[in-house]
Length: 144
Image (cartoon, rainbow, N blue to C red; front, side, top):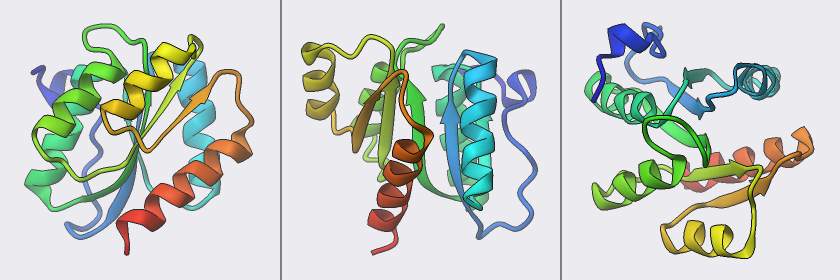
């Protein structure tokens, strides 16, 4: 895994017991739009530019006591795809709902995502209210 200091996706937590949503998206403009939407919805958001940084952030959250309530991840990213990151998370029993987003949402991609344990998959372009609803459902599922 890459160093968190190198990718700098991890902000210093305000307190060890806070809850956050992790957004992994390699397209900077799309990531900014998603982050702005989730912050408007009053979520604390952690950003990752690729799948390796996503896994680094999950590891850092576990080490610092930050509760990841949900992960929003693009499917196609450099270094490690969102699908591969989801497979790693499922194999390590990370209990975080993952919402995948993709511009290549064919039936095969959707089926694979659900088999790997994705909470939801949204096809780009998607309405930000649909993303907000999916994140709210995922966060609600982790708090019950």
